[in-house]
Image (cartoon, helix red, strand yellow):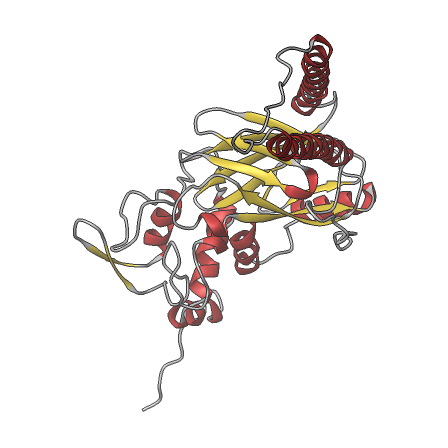
Amino acid sequence: MAALQGAQDGGTFFPPQATEAAAEHDSVFFLIFWISAFFFALINVAAVYFAIRYRRRAKGEPVEKSPSHNTKIELVWTIIPTLIVCYLFWIGMTGYVDRRTAPAGAYTVYVTGQKWSWSFAYPEGFVSNELHAPVGRAVKLVIGSTDVLHSVYIPAFRVKMDAVPGRYTEAWFESNRPGTYNLFCAEYCGQQHSMMGASVVIHADRAGFDEWVKEQTDLGDLTPVELGALLYTRKGCNTCHTLDGARLVGPSFKDLYGSPREFEGGGTAIADEAYLREAIMEPTARVTKDYSPTMPDFKNGPIKIEASELVGFIEFIKSLSADGAAEQAQAPGEAPEQEQE
């Protein structure tokens, strides 16, 4: 896997330009900036000059008569700004249409936002919590949300598009610089909005990207615990559940297995395999006390968890508690040793 460190030579106002569209975006921005600066200076210099030139005179001093009409000046300050505004509209509209129309044959990745993480579904049939693509290949993002309004924002690409519940929006990019870049949520979506980020990895060549895809799809040699550990980050569980006992949006996985759970509205249960299955697949069926029902539904929602992945999740969570680790350490079919009297 070849993914180089992202370029750090961004300008004063913007991060590095990692796409050709970013360079076009910046050129339009600075064009508008310098036009605005020119007219700002012109108007203010003129205002100061006129304030002095036509200031109120002392009593008895003759007042200079100012002109009331000048056709040439009026034509100049009408025609030139009109032409400038029409030109800015033209380059803005053509740029907008180009950014909304992905090239034919673009590599399609489905992006799903949920409180508070991103998931990326690839056409090869796997889901990751990172967005990967090779240099020089157009990537089309089909964007949706499972809960509230989010917004995909990749500053280095100058890409921003809302993720709207109940519908798909689209954006695309073609990166020309390998590296690792940041993806943020640019729409305030709740308590953990500031933590809702992801990495965008642009591989230096197609071979490096294909190797990464192969690594994601070839999971046959992983044990259930290793698979669960991989899915913990790939599915975005790490944004809401810690492994060290600290509290985030959801309960920590540390010592979760075998512990008593209290639920909103009353009721208790022991966190065994049956409970973990229900908590993962139908998280709103019984909500843990003092927590909000914000976890996505993996049974009926757009993102599914396969049976083998569910086993991996459960075994991974079990490995993080003393009781679960002891069960896993016991060989299949082997009876516990009896104490000798």
